[in-house]
Image (tube, rainbow, N blue to C red):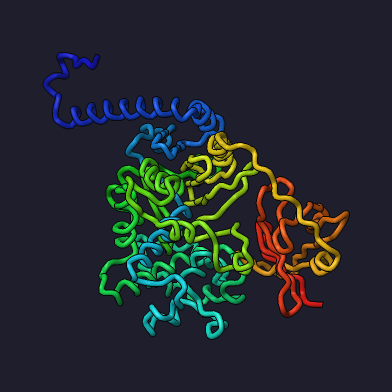
Length: 494
């Protein structure tokens, strides 16, 4: 029972009562969460053990099942020496933000504001073209919003100036694009290779703003995302800016040493990684994805939209029929023989990850407040096992027998065809493919050889994978292109 000493009775005001009410609400929330934890069958003590053993200040986890079960769990402190994290604590998510940019673009297409496969030059004002991008192949392969979101624009990632830019006042998208336009140069034709670049989501959001204006909608990207995505998904806390409410509840992020504070970073392209959110609000996103596009028995994404969101279309491998790759802000990973849709995030002082399996009907969102992948890795291992637990082991596809003419065209020395961060002589990096005993083997610079098993004449997998994750494709000009988890490589024509 809560008791007030007589000497303190006179000082009882509305403010302490509010604090008491919040404490009671938090206690009820924790009790509710622990009840659902038992239903979900995840030992939350393991999460607290990870926090204590790694010395991270805080971590938060949201687990969701298709049947509606939800666990919101936070452990740790908002900052060292400060109060404990609670249901009101806001975390940064980094690049998981790209998923919401992809959804906003899909909704814009649904509303007839833009088309993902229409050249973006059709939406941009003439005076913005020079500061937006440069594509030497624009006449034969115009740049589209789909290229930007699938990382197939042919760009390197943001320049150092863009990565390190941190004004007290956040930039508009137009200002951000004007900061270093030469960084958005296509180094290979759009729609060829997928190579991660944060700039793509930034330009895609700006294209949406311009298309919306042409359609008579006077709202910026953040307002459109709130209207079309955050409100329907029940995410009222989602904010791209450091608002007063975010600042009041934001959990402090730390460097790799878990002690050095990292100040709030105003990323120049907020649609690429700028979201701040209550972890509990991520339950709406996960529930929609697990229920295959439905929110409270209403259709949020059609089956066709969901397919477009989850699977790539613009790479050479995707056009060959390979479904494994990067969609509109989400990619796939093989975990213990099962494919999970997922995306990770880095917000300088925070690391996050979202993953889900439509097959198991389970998904999670996790965030830690330290720039150390080993900590998040331990959390992910625990949660990936939980997601996959209901699934039965999958049988790998029957191995396709390559004939002599097929394997002879594929063996040889391949050279790196794309890179995220260009370094000296990056195009000289080599990968060798050999043939032995009816199978192909890749051999990298360290001499290690690993089998590459054929699923069909063009698609391949590793022995521990249960679906094709790479494509080897003979081109009309004699080159052979390898695309997949190991990157993008090209064997020159004879």
